[in-house]
Length: 336
Image (tube, rainbow, N blue to C red; front, top):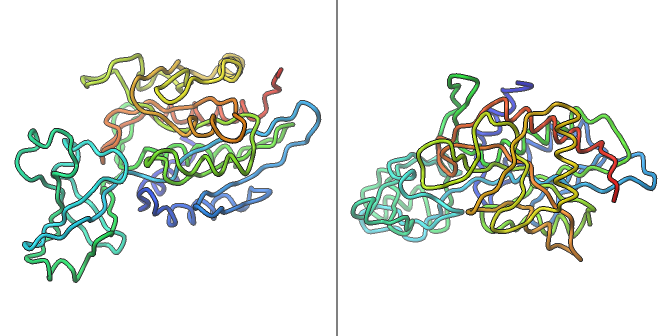
């Protein structure tokens, strides 16, 4: 793997949806020596540009990887010190149950449930966080209404070049864009590596970024749920199946010409790939697609087991294949 320590560092940063400043500061420091221009916009997106050589065939390509991770926010403090919460992004109550969380000030706690987790039926409003407080007054010494928290989950190496960690959705994409930026070899296309905010809250960050850039092509760089283990999803996604080329999800149908260009890049550069179709979920491709007067979009995704949890599992080989595809696609000469 090119720089596993960089990926590990990214996963362990704290940055739930709407509170991505720590992640953005880290990425900006990594990107600065390689960037031609860096813009931080009003909503918190970090836009890193590499200028192309121009010419009639050059395109503006926007790669979007979101910095935020899912978490919770305190909405009420009970008299016994329990913290009632709402979700920041989609939390599976089953995987959240008994997990550990950390607030931005360093306070830690454990997620539990009012009643049985089965009765919660994936309603995060049934969850609460125990920080060890014995009363509301005690809890207020450490947290307050509106304080956000995110999962704790160390970075682990598994067998067969697989890894496990919190926030792989989507620090994987951030890692891939940083590596592609560092390896950028020029070409006719203007490349915008965009590190977006608030994707987990409805792909909010990528739309204003796309409105600013007005790309010819937008590419979401993200994860996608695996289908190769016992779960409630059906499809063809496999860990170690190569980098995923998005065809369709409930929020977007990717541009045929963009998909064909990605397939051509993989075939020319012998990059292992798989076609991705899912019937639940979405990415920043949806908001880029509908920005301005419309944008051709595609998606590059790493297939992930146990997504939206503190223990997601992915293949290093798939991650690296994604970097190869981003680099090849960046230099591609498009016929349209």
